Image (cartoon, rainbow, N blue to C red; front, side):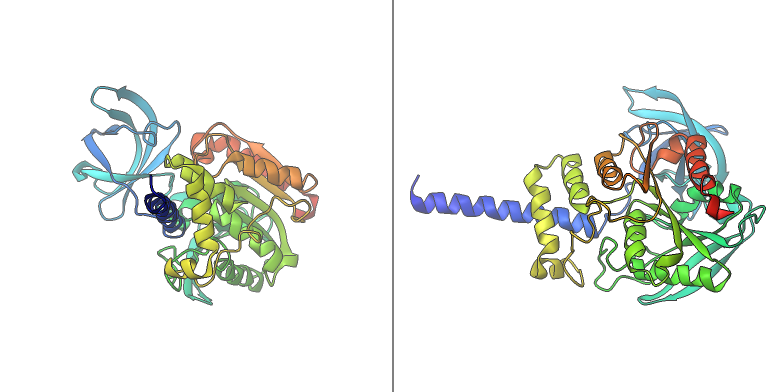
Length: 377
């Protein structure tokens, strides 16, 4: 091979690496739309769907269909390997499931706050990026009126997903504020349209904390799911109300975005260098601008594996079944902060589906952690 041909081949390799990195980087900050699941048959008590890793997963899940229809899907009844279908229980339905030909499989067990059977209202918060709605949910028995729980959902979803953590704090008598933030489809859009992975979103949640304080909160428990966990960690250091952040409960949290990106590359069947290229693209001033980011991603600020960085007592709920955010990241967080972090590893579940697999164990972990805090009384 001539030097010219070798140079061309090497240039092609470099172009391929950069291109793959940009595609992965775009997927990180601009999550793709949900994939529809075909519905084959429906009865009064069951539904038959396309079988895949998600619909075969152990536990109870949500199925969105039609114009806001929602069904709670229970345990597996049968799996037809040849037809590639799975039949599962139908527990509750809101809407006309019988006429649906497809739906969206999610961890959302609640169609909205009304499903919790508690008094609630929607409040609209004026945040730096525009406006952000939040659900204010009253507990059945307000035993801890001065302690509010602020629930923060993850990337590529909405506040309905974090309703799963409301029952545990409700059992302790806490008010819940279930928030939205820029770019999640409910709050105002992100400038540029891309997620900043927590570097800017925390500002919107800080307004929600301020609302809680203005309405009687003297202590705040932050409950963060996935990216919501990364946002909660930013608030510990940057919130105007950080002195009132009393406890953290983190579910499948992203505590090191570099590790999460490499995990995502592996899940897509991409080599490790693709993850490295994506990280470089996101942290590069020129390429991050092309992705719609207002500034490059500061991965050091988003890395919580450094010892002693986390001063707030924290419960981390995670499992080895997570294919998006590696359990190892939570292990490193706990090892770096042995005095403040309690890691509870639940039964294997895909990303943030620990509640769906075992809600009793999830609620018990949260309640035990918060009840052990004598200062909450």
